[in-house]
Length: 384
Image (tube, rainbow, N blue to C red):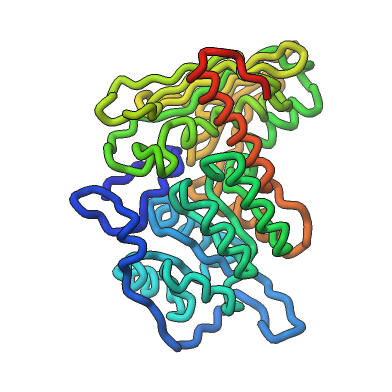
């Protein structure tokens, strides 16, 4: 399976590959994985009734690139949570992960017996790392099983799906967080602090670009029904840059265009590149660009008293930049961002505090994604 180290959250399908093509049939035609061996993690306090865990047990759903190369290693660095279980449709992956991370047989699930996770006290949080088209289904299943849920971005395909996910978690009194790692990292928090406190005056204009050269042709990112298209994947980084960079929510999509230089790959309306202008209050505009055909990674925030500039803006190795107030460059190493994200979210659950990036945040971005596509299709301004 071809993977990339690009900042795109490359959640490759965890199913078998047949002639290089991913199929849903592979999800259901799997062997049942079970066992009766007991596993007591040294990373938790006494789990007897009346005692609280020192760490939350996390089950990763989907073992593609992002889980394998980033989330699992990050869970070896976390203080407030640990890798307790997995859900995969590939028995060979299940065995490999079991050996590598000393997972108990009873904490390994597939997509046929996933509902049984409800009876497993080792699992506190289910982290959904699947193609976007599957997010709603498994977030709702996890919430109905009585588990807190973390979900990778993009949150879902439609705003209605996002709302359904939020409603399911609220109904079951479980927390939902979206995997926007950047909102947990210090350089993003620093430029947001400058904006929120108007340390450089009001924001006048924002420009944000996020993209990379995607060489694959049969990944879910090239499959519209599965949530493909650059705007859903890299585009939410650019949308986040516009929203966080202005400190406001957009009131309209002024204009938008979608295009491709590879119509044999990005077909049936699938976007390889999307460009849009977002309008905010007080006449503030944000120009965004996202692409699977170009390496772009920057955020410029023009303020009354100077320019905040980040490049790279959303790299796994750390965003960095500068402003008239000084450098914005907190040094850290991969996979620190994911570890910080999961530690923050676990602590919010343990302390019964609001999630730093709740489901409502993912919903806001998907509403904007839908509006951008509508503007690009109609050629008209779209009010939000």
